[in-house]
Length: 160
Image 1 (cartoon, one colour):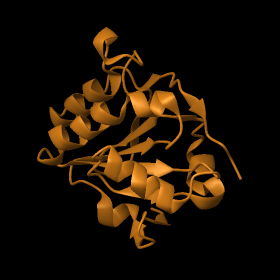
Image 2 (cartoon, one colour; image 1 turned 90 degrees about the vertical axis):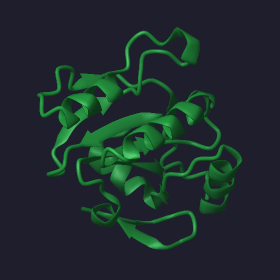
Image 3 (cartoon, helix red, strand yellow; image 1 turned 90 degrees about the horizontal axis):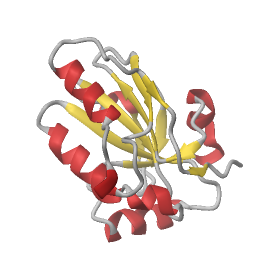
């Protein structure tokens, strides 16, 4: 478990935000064009799985992007999921996150069951494999996750 401030500077713990069937941590960025190419897909993911008991949480670990910038970005892009500010990139360091967007899917017992990219293409029209959704669907169906890792791609997290 960890606690980070959200974009309104309210302390939020992983435990308080976790979904009953799992939690997806998405490392995202305000300025990264790759992360921004995923805004609609990340929001759709959050909406599609919310009622299935899987929570999506955004984490911004970029030193140059403050909470106000992250909040404005979320508002402009209609991101409804909570976004936490990882000042000093402690959580990014702990998990080994290096790029945005990068996903970590934890099952209901907080065990990491998938880590990596959301899908295989920056351009939504070219997506052929959806590793994150496949992992989420497997967990919901009570099955083992077949592909537990797929290399994430995007902009490097700008560390403190």
